[in-house]
Image (cartoon, rainbow, N blue to C red; front, side, top):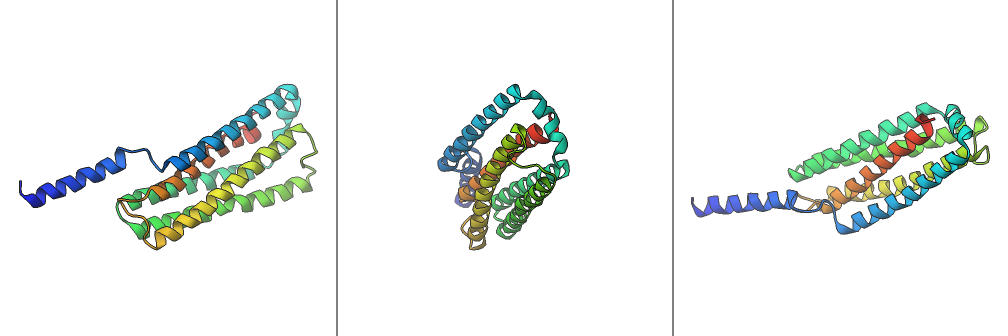
Amino acid sequence: MNTSSTESLSVALDTETAVHGRVPGNSGIWVGIFCVLVEFLLLFIVYFIAKAHNPEAFTTGPDKLLTLAGTTITILLLTSGYCMVKAVSAIRSDQRKASLRWIIMATLLGFGYPIVKYFEIRWNVAHGIHGETGVFYTVYYYLTLTHLVHVSWGLLGLIWIAMRTGVGAYSSHNYSGLEAAALYWHTTDVIWLVIFSFFYILR
């Protein structure tokens, strides 16, 4: 094997190790994700305590919510999360423009969430559903609006990595920042799936 072939093999092995032999993202984002998960774990405990003391309110409460809004938000977030998977995959292959397109699409879909939530809250208020309507709706507003705050932070992160991707800050050898943003975004997806089940589906 000549020197050129040996060097090429070495680079390939180094790249493979960089992709598969490390923790995705960075240590900072994992600390952040851990804090978010602990926060929502505590909120979910509050949900179960409130439900245990007010079973009837949590049985009938979902009937008055706009399930279409919750379903739409679910589809938007899951589709946006898929776009981030494609964005990371593209940058791993040094397809920077393709990665940028996927990030932009993920961001636009993500912004659909606060838009839908705005109209959902207007619908709720018009039908007499607000934070003081009952314990179920108090918990519902607290959890969903707290989640919306975290999604807003995630959207700011997506905008930031879109700008950095646009100027060529990421490549197949350096994309931990992009991956970190994707991990946080996926975390908000998973949390929303739990919230959606608790308030729109389960009785």
